[in-house]
Structure formats: C-alpha cells, structure tokens
Image (cartoon, rainbow over all chains, first blue to last red):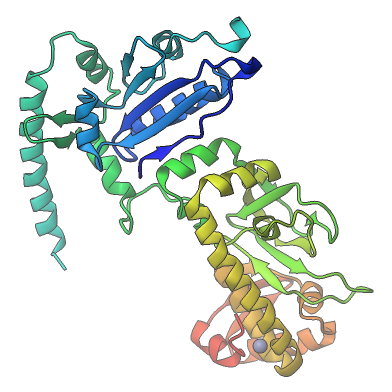
Length: 109
Length: 292
Ligand SMILES: [Zn+2]
C-alpha cells in the first residue's frame, strides 16, 4: 500500500479542532489492517470527520517512521493538537486512542 | 522456476535468520514499555531496526503478507473474481457491507427503468441480462457469474437499469447497497480497474450476441450457451429447462428440443428433465459457434 492522505474534513460546529494523525503500518499485515479500520472508524464516528489522517507504509518509507520515532508497527502518532502522543498496537482499545488524541467525541460534548 | 522443496528450504533458512535478527532488535526495547506490551498482546506486525533502517516482520505478519502478495496463491479464496482482485485492505474495508443472499431461480433483481438499489457479486449462481421486449420472447445479452457483477451501469454513473436482471440458476451472491458500492468505487482503484475490464468484456459479449442471434445456427447457439453457463458456474452439471433456453436465445421451444436432442445423440451432453450434464467439452466446443 502506498502512503495515502485522508482528506482533512471540516470539524463539526465550525470548530477548528482537527486532529493530525499519522498511522504507521506494515503493508497489509493483519494488525496493520485492523489498525487502519479502527482509526478510520474513530475518525468517522467519534471525531465527526474532524481529523487529518495519513497512513504511512513503513515497508516503503522506513525513513519516515524513524524520523517520527516509530519503533514498531502499527503505531499511531498524534502530531496536532499538542502535546503529541503515541499509541502502539492495533488500536482496538478505543478509549485509549481517544485519550491519546485528547479530543472528546462530539456526543460527549 | 525453483523446485518446490528447494524454495521451501530457502524460505526456512531465511526465516530463521529473520527470527535471529528479530530477537536481537527486541532485546533493545525498553522493558515493560508500550512497545513490549503491545508485542506481548500480539498487536504488532513489524519492528524497525534503527541500526540499518530495516523493517523486520513478525512471523505472523510475514506469513500473512506472503499469502496476499500478488500472484501468490494461499490467500483465503474470495469466491467472486472481482472481489478477489481487491487488495486485502480494500476487501476488508468493503467486507462489512457485503451481505450474503440466496437468490432463487427466476427471481428478478431489477427491471428496466428501475433504480439499482443493490449490486450483486454472484458466487455460485448465474444471472441473465435481458433487454426490454414486447411479449414473452426475449434475447439474453449477458450472463453474469462468479467472475462478474450485476449492476455495472452504476460504475458508469447511471443508477437506473436498462435491463432486466433475472436469476437463471439459483445460488448465493454477495450484495452491496448502491451508496456503499459507489463509495467503495471511489476508494478502490483496483475495483475501478477490474470493473472497467469487466464492463468492456460485457459490452463485447453483448455485441457478439447480435452477430450470434442473426447468423449462427440454433444448435451452435445452444452449445455456446451451455458452455457459457458452465463457465460462469464453474460446473459441468446444472439445471436449465428448455423453455428458459428458448426464451434467452429468442427461439421456439421446439427448436431447443431438436438441438438438445442432436447434442445428446452425439454424446456431447446428457439432458433429462432440466438436468444437464456436459459429457464431452471438446466436442461441445467444436459443435458451438464459440460465441462465449
Ligand atoms: Zn454464435
């Protein structure tokens, strides 16, 4: 899989809380596929699309992963808003991901 | 080409070397850190060796990637060719929207002029595409099986069918709601590419039907139609009544009885009460007009 950039979407209610997320994966390996599905669901369902998600295949771009301090895949880096945060694993623990992203879901606002 | 056992042995040596490297890199991880925890939970596919910027795959990921590598066999077979062509990631994304349905023979999936609400990916059924006609007689312009999809006009931006899609031979199919199919089409380059090729083939087959129905003999056409059904169904045995063959070929029932009788007399097929079996494929091919 090539690195692919999700379209940054307008946040709900005109707020500018767009999370910039980078997910580092190893091709179509099982945990990587799972992590992609999980983070896409979170972006859609919990962040109301207010996220700029980029998926980076470390098999093709190992240097990018190293530059971002990624040791294992899958790893999710939250680059914005600050502070930055990192979650490793297949992102099946949704609460942990939301906590790391630091943005509450629209329903809980 | 490498001999099977040799390539297997090479693979084994390679994976042993990888495992040795893997354990070396693993020892450098922070004890009890998040990476190590995730590894213990089985949630990690690969680890990056910063000393030489190599990505080392864990054994499970290595095996999985080997089975999804293009041209490699071993991936869990997806029973429809168009879906099987998708990458694992594209397929997994579409998978939640795929609903397995049983389609009985004679069921109509959509009528001409009706909006297409679902697309269907046949697995072991065959669907006949019939343009609107006056009266009972029709002419089949397409036959969709495991290698195709019903509802292709959606991919061309038209959400109304110009054809009747009627189940010719009952079986199972995977169906996807129209909206979900359209978004999958946007997301997946592979699906677009495969569908373009398929629609091209469908168009070519429909054009051939015009030639076939005007110029070829009924017996040849029956042979072609049986071979086509067999190919779409991946089976030498299927159920098809004479009336239905007559309808899709746009001929009288008596003509079918005569043609099928002749093919049977030459021991190319057996045909009794709708149960058809191809006995001699090469012979049937020779007897056909090869429009399939
Ligand atoms: Zn013909």
